[in-house]
Image 1 (cartoon, rainbow, N blue to C red):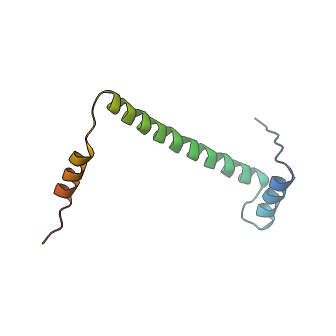
Image 2 (cartoon, rainbow, N blue to C red; image 1 turned 90 degrees about the horizontal axis):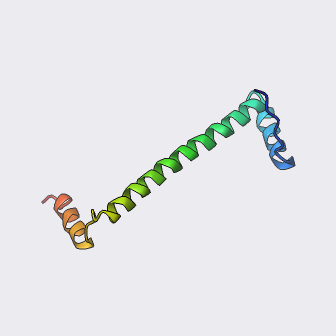
Length: 82
């Protein structure tokens, strides 16, 4: 499926510069890489949101620890070796 995009003068110039410098073989390669990076970022954000939702569900269900419990667990797990 063919696409037509309007990037504006600044981004058009940047795409052209990347191709002229040999960083990419064509304008299409630059745009594919851009879309791939957006996809990667959106996937990462979805994973982060899922973790936040999981944490909030734990809070709502009462699956939480006090700061003193966390501190004691930390010290127990990471007690300096003598």
